[in-house]
Length: 71
Image 1: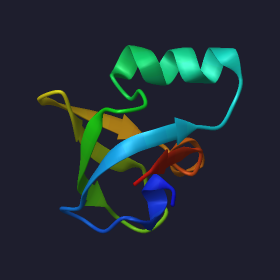
Image 2 (image 1 turned 180 degrees about the vertical axis):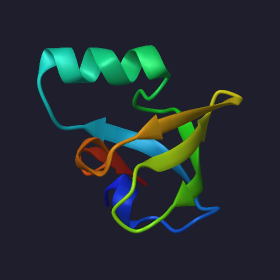
Image 3 (image 1 turned 30 degrees about the vertical axis):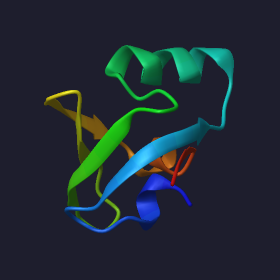
């Protein structure tokens, strides 16, 4: 399942990222890498998602979040 399918407060572990090398690098710079736990802080409709990753908050647009898969 992708990040956009999670509800507020949900916790999951990143299992994979779909996209090119530059996209994966950008997410890696944000701390979103396979095996990393993430928590959905806020997911308001079609607006960007706010995630907690490694003790900090990260904002991802919906299009980016659709390409991040979790378990």
